[in-house]
Length: 431
Length: 124
Image 1 (cartoon, chains in turn brown, blue):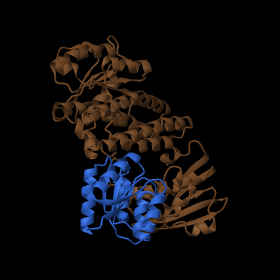
Image 2 (cartoon, chains in turn yellow, red; image 1 turned 45 degrees about the horizontal axis):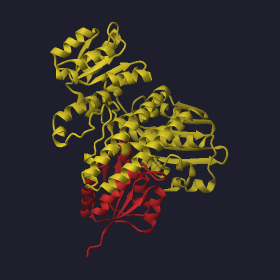
Image 3 (tube, chains in turn cyan, blue; image 1 turned 30 degrees about the vertical axis):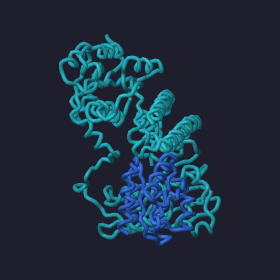
Image 4 (cartoon, chains in turn brown, cyan; image 1 turned 90 degrees about the vertical axis):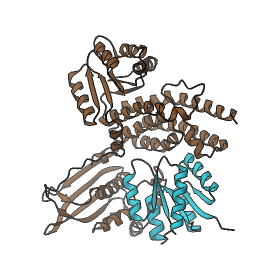
């Protein structure tokens, strides 16, 4: 339901749900399938209703021993469906003719598949509708009553989460943080990922830890009493110890002005993360910030000859894979680069427009669309920004954070484009 | 002379489509590229390919709907390989249930796709 609410933010629609109290608390079924079905039907309703309400009700229809038959009904006060359309509504491909679907593409299931899923679960679905008054979908699915004992709590892990956790395992993290509560939180979080945290609220103390202990990454609260995060960073970068002066530093702050960001880059801070951040963000940034360290020290640096312009900070362009994929055909690579630039410009324009219109679903879609190209040219910096744009607009929809991420993209993109152009030039020269 | 195998590539992302089109053609396939679901359906209605490679998220016609259409409307058992992206894992499972044969995740390695295509065609 929460997910659906995010879809109706700019429409005059009421979303209501009622659940029969007689339904047992624990039921055994296929939650992912049920979610798919409900999201689809509710999603459709939201698309077709301009104002009025959408109601989801779940009641117990009948029960046979442990088996309960639950009746779901989704009614809307939308435009309704004409009888002739109604007849074919569950047929394959009828969905696609709807011009409404042209807007975002058919990422939905289509009613034929919804029907098939319900039937596979041993249920059935019916629909009634009146033009101009609304539509009601009703379906019944059998569920088995469950026991609390055999209820295994499985967290809905985001894809790749395990991989990320694996990547940061054993990571030695030095945290500069003066707030006691924040210290606790971050310590717990890091420990839960099997990192080895060192927490300090004292700049000098932290610097001495850096010189004496092996640390992989530094998390730095910028606003600390005494020595500011920027000053500490400067000291770290000026250290004579090579291991210390090249350590990745992630700045943490509640607000980053453009000036702050510029100063971050100037000071040699590699990444920044905005407070409050989700644990997922922190994890991603840890993975991202430590990755290049590992690869440069092993294989990558031996394979790729350093080129003249390789003193980049955040931006990185790696053409090795794509050139291999293109089987060395420079013409194809050039074509891809042209498309890449077009996509980026389209993205910049589209996101600006959708942000202005508060159309976050469209923002997420634009982000999704550009990701594949960003990944192909291995422009990982931009990819991470876009991924965050996609996640933020899909999840909490924090507008301020989205604007910040968008600005990051705007600042980063020209740098990346320049790097791409330089690289293309170098490749052509070598021919 | 051996006739070239016909491959329908359904991919709405220009970059990926260009790259895969190039590689598959180089690999000896006759490639028909469709950039949205309507085109896919038109091609399928005209001529059945030997194999389909389709993105899961496409305008007008998702990869799942495509699988459903091929298996249940056209009653064809030609191999279908789905290209998925992160966040679509659930849909990939559905596509499998509907009868997809294999899937490959983005970012797609063309070389890997070539191997998968060849493998599916060898099974037939």
